[in-house]
Amino acid sequence: MDAKREAEIKLRFEAVAATADERTRRRLAGAEAKAMGRGGVAAVVRATGLSPNTVRAGIAELDGTAEPVPEGRTRRRGGGRIRAVLKDDTLYDDLNRLIDPVTRGDPEGPLRWTSKSLRKLSAELRALGHEEASPSLISSLLYDLGYSLQANAKTLESSGHPDRDAQFQYIADRVTAFQEAGEPVVSVDAKKKELVGDFKNAGRELRPIGEPEPVRVYDFVLAAGRATPYGIYDITQNEGWVSVGADHDTAAFAVQSIRRWWEAMGRTAYPNATKLLITADGGGSNGSRVRLWKVELAKLAAELGLTISVSHLPPGTSRWNKIEHRLFSHISMNWRGKPLIDHETIVSLIGATTTTEGLRVRAELDRACYPKGIKISDAELNDRPLDRDDLHPQWNYTLRPQA
Image 1: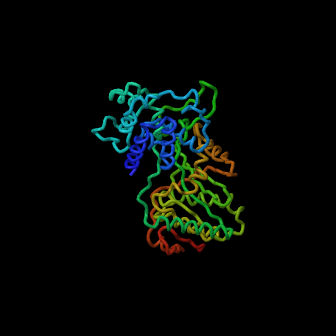
Image 2: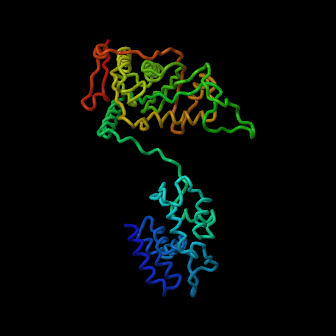
Image 3: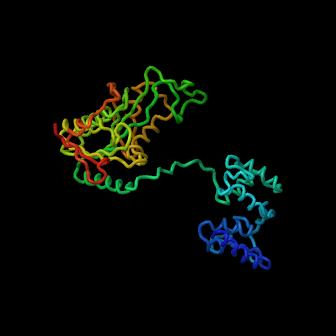
């Protein structure tokens, strides 16, 4: 469709350009670009061979925003330097052919996607006869054509569950209902495990010139091992709790972290609470299929006298968990460039995390042992006071506070 419109623009422009002066051609090109809308300038440039600046000047004249042209002239005084692209009819076409995403990776194409540097594009264009195609000119032309250097963007998710949107809506409705009733709502997850020691940490911090902090060359695990931060983010209060574990990331550790949050922060913030809503990923130590997670939550419900409801995010959507961008991202920014030399340093850096929106974070070290491989039988799981919801009962369930 775009190729057809460009062909039509070319026919109309050529029919007028032979007998029109420069101002008329400029305004005609501007009118075509305005009529086409988004991408119109680039399309007119390809169809007419005019400079993008000329087309934009035509638009500005039509809009009445351009500097007036003196009577008897077709351009403002001092204008008119002829760019290489105007003297070279096929430069735009050949450049487009080299960088067209449709031909990326084509074994018959003159360039591969790994070779799209300005120098290589310049060399290829010169080999095609465009002697003035310098890297700086190529950079200008690419900008005119709407290209820029861009990194990969992590935007593609898995195919997704057919009821993904329904589950998100269900979670949103539950969160709203709990908040309106004054009941606590938290988002939980384990942050990435961190090596403890004088290792390189991503990011940079201000230091005297020539005095970077020395760290180890190789990331071999030391005696201090690894740290596992498990976070609880209070969505309503904009407060976070992080238990920094020194042992395995298990369901018992996850529930113990929730217990410590309630004792240190939750009980004070919600003295009249009767229920607690937990939103969590579908995997990891708090996964929807982890039996020990449900058994430990049942114990916690009985201890606290709270009805604990859980809603898991659908598969492949963990990046939408609120704790990721409301808490963990700020922790990572706060300790960037700082070696996590010991567990106490990690706790201190997490606890010092704040934001302009008022985020407060508390952190404590948990040196308890949490053995892996604990098996829960069907009978033991079925003996727990667990009620499953009608919508995706594997993702939505409630544990009643019964001994």
